[in-house]
Length: 154
Image (cartoon, rainbow, N blue to C red; front, side, top):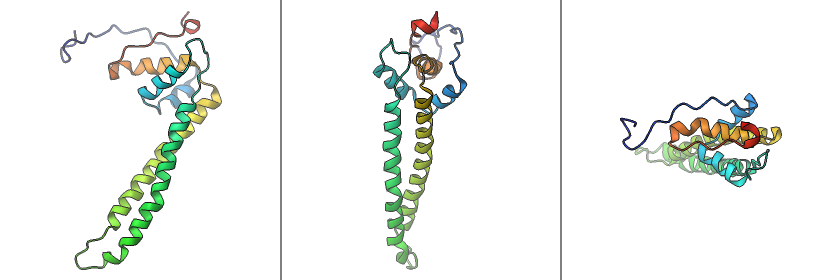
């Protein structure tokens, strides 16, 4: 039993299973365990190749949202520019600048995730690779490892 988490038992170390491709493993690192689990839930157990369209759609949606925040933040900066020279200094420009900064970070982050999901789609990622990546994260998220597909574990 784990002394820091009562009621949780430490499982013995499972034999290390490597993904079929290091490129796929790197691209899968861009996604959270819940996103990988959702992709696995959409894919039948018998399927060798998984559809990552869910990852593409999610990254694209967030990328569009962050891109739309850029001109809004720029407009807020523009609205507050005359107030910057005011003696009180009460301007909304810093808020607009914060929105621009957050939007730039979001565009960069979601753009990288979109490129990773498109690479996974191009390489036709196998279900086995997603299960291996999910199982590698299980000790850190408190989830039980998923069984490997039969064709790959034999």
